[in-house]
Length: 354
Image 1 (cartoon, rainbow, N blue to C red):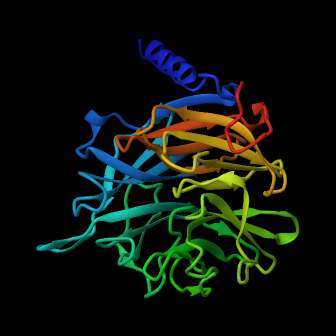
Image 2 (cartoon, rainbow, N blue to C red):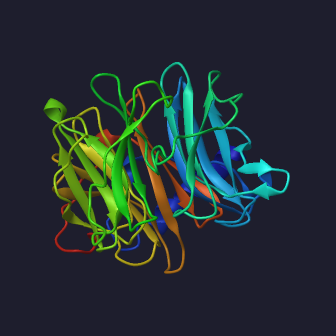
């Protein structure tokens, strides 16, 4: 019975996203919810993150009555033997008996020896601070939360990348003096830190960068912006200095994106191909990080629905795993086979038709 229900769910998803627009659904090998609403005590969720965890996966997100509410905490689920575990709360923003702040934007990273879980705590994005917990047993138990140094927030939404020299490059941003990007570095898994100055002027609002890796150590950032386009910049010194932000050929609806460099050298990005709203979410693919082509339409629904804040990784078996917010009620997990992606060029600003 369970297999029949799963098959019907997949068929419904494919029907939903093939209504006249190019779907590319042939590369989707799994589409599922990480949990059901009856399994958790919170009605609202957002901002997921995902890592490979040995032979399994781990995902985290923030959940509570609603974003910004003090009861919002960080929740984690582990994927083992083909099944997601019931989510558990691992961070709660409690300061003392009379004070609790909401938690925001978790980011997981697997060092190989331990799992790092960065997240933010505070009443708003302009006043929050960074915290870190760790696990040495694949997320079964977590350390006591540790507040990061002043002006250090950890990766703000998207995963860190390990660069030459063993440093962890954490793409970050702030919202207290305009929307501004910066990079943070730690060579000891969060004990000591460095950070760059702001990478953009206040007049160009940009936050939540994600990092791609190119040949010869060249790095590329892509980020959310307030100018209706995804912006990019480049670094040739391991992220210490960056070129001026420039738009690429993809729209941005002022919502989060994520991307990863694949083992075959291509790059895949998950984003909303919209300038307004969040009722569609897609994947695009590129050889050079500049020219992008349509790959997969993951969701397409009526205006007012929301599919947003994706996270994307590639696991050791070559598969691509994506998580994203599904109508603020659940976290969706989609698995792609990148070898089965059929690319389609963009002919304008709209997503291609079938």
